[in-house]
Length: 369
Ligand SMILES: Cc1ncc(C[n+]2csc(CCOP(=O)(O)OP(=O)(O)O)c2C)c(N)n1
Image 1 (cartoon, rainbow, N blue to C red):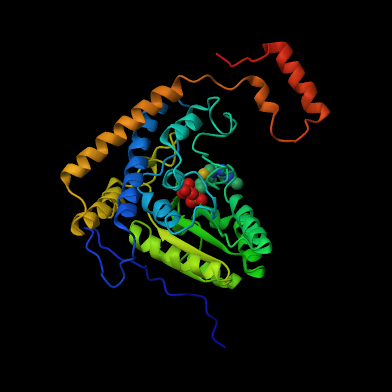
Image 2: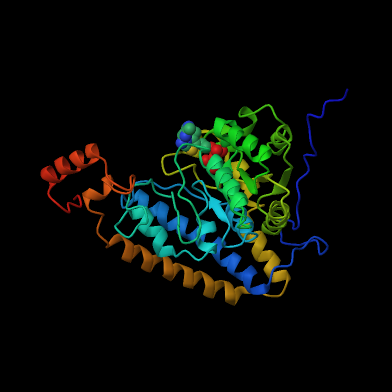
């Protein structure tokens, strides 16, 4: 008997590196929406450049970037409805911005000030937005995957028609939570999309040392789930593949795993030096497939973009980011009591005792400094 260990490793693509596209495969996305998607991609990239500078100046504690991976989160979020749930990792500010979250709110999170939704109790880049149905990421890798599956099963039981999508990296596919999540999703036909951003590395560990499997998408076979591979730097391809998975999930067809092949241009985080484990020539090669330039090429070829519009857009985003930094940095840190709040609806005695002790030591409303 033949054992099927492999699936087709081909990558789905709609456009080439210059933005030339296949008309037959081009998804139908209204012009305004395309421009909005492009704006968000550029915002993520520019946000990152400024935020990394803030970290180097000691104004924020840490930063973890999304540069080079913008097409993954923006293209896939664009294929969802706003009521669908997103369970992100840390490289998806694009998902929040596309849903209408503000740059200012992202800076509140990075500065951990009192306007931050989580009152500074999360690491930087663990963005969430309750209003926008985007859950807060957990730092332990892959833990968001079972959360997404649970939410999808709940949506199915409640017949809301909503689905869930979760983002994670290639390294996450080696974690127990990935396997439990995949198994549950398969068994319960959960309307969930497992969106793996395979950027080639888990910090310094290359994917070829992460797994013997030829592709990550083929891991889906073992769980009876369809697995798709897509060029993660081709936003049109990412949109189309996610759309197909969304339609399947909404019609009761269950989960899909998507492996998007992409590349992180910068370091893993502000605490990493990628020159220790990858050659500059590799980065240069990937820069030819960089997603923002490809999307711009596509928009120009469609006749809806030009140099003047580009200049205007970049100036607008730059001004938005600089004003957000100014505002967010000037806002006070949350009072110390907040570290004890929001875990329990009613604070248990041991937390009350700890809170009283802390307040007696630092004073009420202490904000550090
Ligand atoms: C359970 C767990 N182990 C280790 C870490 C430390 N850690 C943080 S990010 C990371 C790499 C994750 O790689 P991948 O899933 O490929 O995502 P990427 O960072 O490339 O987006 C590791 C090992 C962690 N946060 N959680």
